[in-house]
Amino acid sequence: MTSVPRPPQPPSSLSPSRASDFMQCPLLYRFRVIDKLPEKPSEAATRGTLVHAVLERLFDAPAADRTAPRARALIPGQWDRLLESKPELTELFAGDTEGERLSRWLGEAERLVERWFSLEDPTRLEPAERELFV
Image 1 (cartoon, one colour):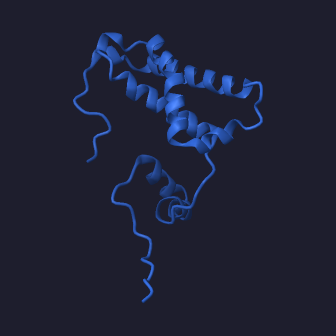
Image 2 (tube, rainbow, N blue to C red; image 1 turned 45 degrees about the vertical axis):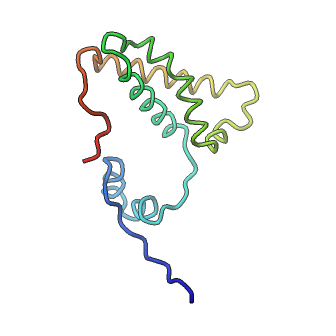
Image 3 (tube, rainbow, N blue to C red; image 1 turned 135 degrees about the horizontal axis):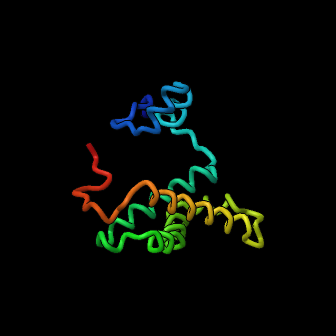
């Protein structure tokens, strides 16, 4: 007996990014969320993921230790973790034999982290939860 494929199911949760996709282009939303078509990762999206991971790890430290230098120091380790979990990201810098593009890209991530500190002071709060699923 052959099994009948189940139709794609809508997600049980909706992130702000996916809501924005739907508002801009419902077909894009369908391709990304419902059909789960593979997409080649972009440098910009990957940099955002890296910065987000760095800021998450920053909140593992006591409030007084949540400084810009500490956050910058987290970038290489978080980049390595990201590569371990998603090896396909190495393709972003294929052909960059000298490592110049990667170095510039990591520098841009550092600047984004620095800019975050001009908007927020992570030493002033102790969060009860992070990335809480609601």
